[in-house]
Length: 43
Image (tube, rainbow, N blue to C red; front, side, top):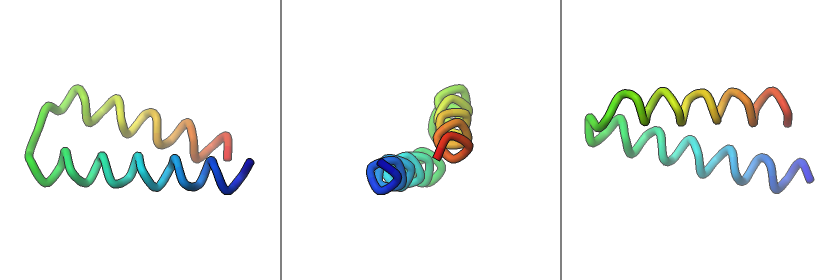
């Protein structure tokens, strides 16, 4: 369970890094950050 959560969290971090790198939509970035924080707190 924890391993799957960590893997999902890692994928989310990669997505955030990609959005940051592309300088993309900030609302989407904020949503991804919120998801990452929620997953981290649950994990």
